[in-house]
Image (cartoon, rainbow, N blue to C red):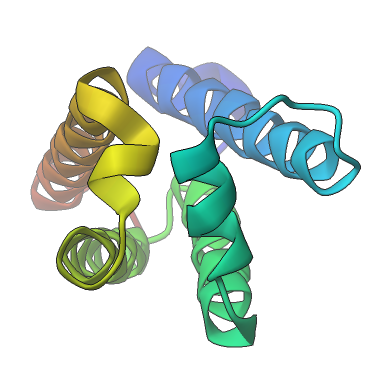
Length: 138
């Protein structure tokens, strides 16, 4: 399908993914370089992260990138990929909420941001599913 027939919503979602992923990578680089001041709760949280946390985060970023490309190329598998990303994000969020001091590190505003991000991801999944049902994805 040529770019002029790609739905405008696909462009919006792909730009959102690009900006979100780039912002996450830039923030992570600044954090690891010590360029972001942290509260004691945030420092404790990051000090307790292990390799599994970083590998899981990297995996989620890679799958999100894959989902964005699948959506851009209007591939049917985007629904499965987005479902996987949403399930991984929900699982990781629940784990962090229960097993770590994540809520203290994020605060109410940060937790609201996570909830908004998860909600937006669910909306994007519903949008992709709708595109699939309409026959836009192949």
